[in-house]
Image (tube, rainbow, N blue to C red; front, side, top):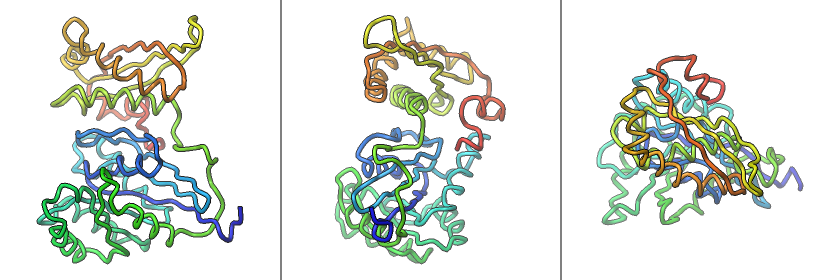
Length: 303
């Protein structure tokens, strides 16, 4: 590999919740490194998705959606998103087609004005437009707010215009070495990815306050007494006794569903068959307690 011809660098993706940042990273990497759901604030930590080709290595940083934080967890998530824009080579500001600029996007762009990096406007979900030319309104609105280095209407779901975006990202990246091994797709541990996979299934199966009130920790992975199996032990934390009852469900039906839907993803991550044991514990108001946040993997250093 010639460093004077090989490109490598870091790209941060920033935006409000549910614009498709995690789905984009998964699409670029070609495998699932970040969980997705239709629930706001699904992404809680910065997730690095690494794309390695013969020409370049790009480390995409998926960030929590920027929102009006109501808890200490929320404040840490928002800070993590802004922190992710430092030390990178390019920023993708992601939004969706709108008829008027959302206030949350205005705040994000105002903060980005402090950066001297190239910022690309990526308008995702154009497949939802009745007429593609309707995107012109969104483009005009956002170009009035920020001097973007490029504008890219895309559909991650339908793989529209992503090649054009990747080509222009490569143009702004510096020449350099590979920072990560070729086979590496994420910088997070297997335990973290497994905990996220379980949390994703809970997001899918529950509603109201439950998705925002859970945390998952994989406590132990060990070889099973059964040949070619592993035993996985994980704990689901909630804030209230009433939430614990919902997660367990009537006659244990909900926890059974969570377990069944999680096992497939966990098998892929471990590349092994497994037995999964789930417990549910109450940590009252853990989202506002710094010590609990640190214990559950949401310390400021871990974001």
